[in-house]
Amino acid sequence: MQKVKIGIVGGTGYTGVELLRLLANHPQAEVCVITSRSEAGQRVADMFPNLRGHYDLAFSEPNMENLKACDLVFFATPHGVAMSQTPELIAAGVRVIDLAADFRLTDLAVWEKWYDMKHTCPEVMSEVVYGLPEVFREQIKQAKVIANPGCYPTAVQLGFQPLLAAGLVDTGFLVADGKSGVSGAGRGAKVGSLSAEVSESFKAYGVSGHRHAPEIAEGLTRMTQGQPVNLTFVPHLVPMIRGIEATLYAKLTLPKTQAELQALFEDCYRDEPFVDVMPAGSLPDTKMVKGSNMCRMAVYVPAGGDTVVVTSVIDNLVKGAAGQAIQNMNIMFALPERMGLEQVALLP
Image 1 (tube, rainbow, N blue to C red):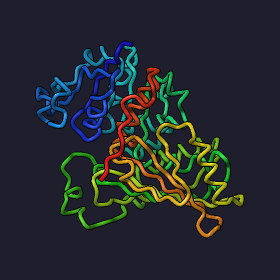
Image 2: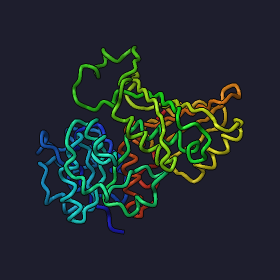
Image 3: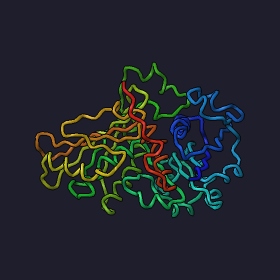
Image 4: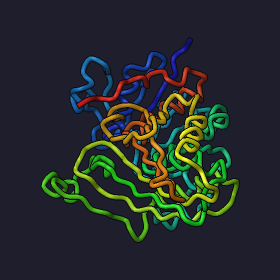
């Protein structure tokens, strides 16, 4: 089987180096090009010593002809970069996976509001598939462009999906309480990301509005076959490097026991390689998924009431970014979905 020739645009951030780490052990992946304007000429293994012995590549200036020679290009770049280059790449037969948000929202007016820039290639949106494999696996197989989901949206959508698909909860009252490690803010130097700023502290942010809220709401609306949802989403920053925990709340419209909801979730995700519905009474924590592509979750009906609570955990850099992107790559190129992604979570 011929290897997939891969280009990575923007390989110096956390998601870029995570792509490199995971692809280093992927038997059917060949990273041919990795670009960075600021680090052009520097060897990858010199910048990231954990990759010594795995890559004999240097960062290069972005060059469209080099990227057109690839089968697939990952964009691990700030918002706005992928949309400027994707039309030319797909015209050349190259498939694209964008780890930023350029293609995540179908309503481009909403996208422009939240990302404060003009969307430059609306004509490409008809070729885009939202890359949540547990929902869109069949569409991903033939996709030219994948909008890789955000980290919070992945944890939240997977947690709500069984309830919404079964029509069991009031879509007018959904609450997602999310917590993320500081790597979610990216590798750039920011005062708010300094150890002295985040250590021994815990805070909410984006309470009045967060870019991931419209992405989550749009995804949940797809799960309800177009019925609008009213979502309250509040993210929090916690003093750790990796990990997302999302605690989700919804009101049941039909009485359901703990056992019935446990069976519903287990049946929904029975055949999913990267979703683990844990036994009743479990409390998933971020260590259970650190460094892995797993989403682990548990479902509760506290005190037998009418509120259902789901707790969902992922590694924001793996299932929330680079790992899910490789999962999408595997599906696109008819490779085993687990290939290159069978890492066991790190403990401690």
